[in-house]
Image 1 (tube, rainbow, N blue to C red):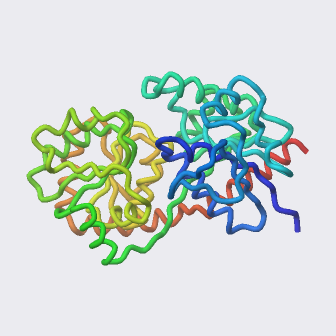
Image 2 (image 1 turned 90 degrees about the vertical axis):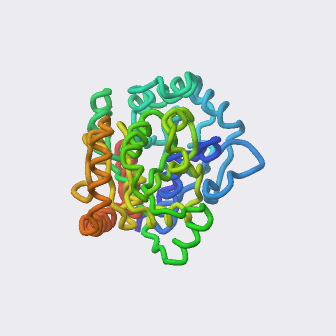
Image 3 (image 1 turned 135 degrees about the vertical axis):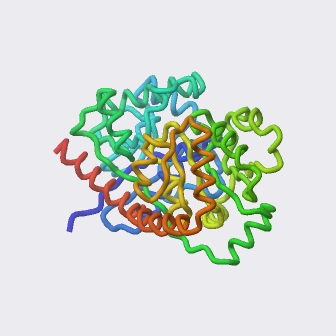
Length: 371
C-alpha cells in the first residue's frame, strides 16, 4: 500500500471578514479528506493568536505563515516567499484552495478555481482584490501542475483564458445530506420569526447574484402568503435597499445564518430561487435540492447545468418570467412534490466524498507530472 499523500492545504480565506464560498468548500473537502487513509492534509493559515469562529475554524493540524493575510497575499503576488511547501514539513503537494496562489516551489502545485469573475467582471471587486486574484489566476495558468474546477462552465472559461486543457480537472462540489426533523423546522421558525411560508435565497449580496430581478419578480406576487427570505452577508447593500419600497415588511434579510439553521431553512422553504447571472457552481442550489426543496434558477448558467431536470430555469433578467415561474410552481403542489423528489435524487450524486476522491486523483496526477 502506498503511503498517504502529504498536502500543504491553504486556508487563509477562513480568516477573511466574509469568508464566503471558497472557505466553505475548502473546509467541506478537508472534512471529507479526514475520512480517507490515502491523504493527510495540513492546513496553512496566517499569523495570529486566534482562530476564526465556527463554522470557519480550520481543522488541525495547522501551520501558520509568519504574516497576516493581506501581507501574505502581497508577498505571494510579488515574491517567492512564504512557500507553503516549505512551511509544511514533508509536504508532497501544495494545494491552493482559492485564487490567491503562492509561487510554485519545489513541490507540485494544485490550484482550485471556482470561477474567473475577477477577469470577467472586475467592477464587482475592490481594486486590490482584482489585482491579487488576477495575479493568482495568471500564476495558476502559468505554473500550476493541475487546476481543479467545479463546473463545466468554469472549465470552458479557463480554456478560453489560455489554460492548458490537459491540466484541468473537473471536480464538482457536494452537499451534506443532513436530515431535518419537525423540531428543527419549528426551532428556526421561532428563532427567525418566520410566521409565513417563504421563498428562500442564499448568497452574498453582490451584483452578479441579480437580487433586484428576484425582488422585482416577488413584488408581482407579493399578494400571495409567501414572504421572501434572504440569507447571507451584505456586500452591496443597495442591491436590496433600492428595490423593496412598498414590500419591505415582506422581504426578510436574515444576514449570516449558521450551518444547522441554514439547512433547516432550506428544508422549510417552499421554493429556493437563485437568479445569479454568473455562478462558478451554485452550491446553494444543491444544498436546497438535498432537502427536497424545488429550485428556480437562471437559464444558461452553471447552476442550470448542476440542477439539470430537477428544477426550473428562467431567463436571468426577465422579472416577469421569474414572477410567472414562481407563482405557477407555488400553486402546483404536485409539481412541487415531483421536483422535490427529483432534486433529492440529483443532489445525492453530488457528495463531498466524491469531491475528495476527485481531488486526491488530482494530487496523484500532479505528482505523476513531475516524476
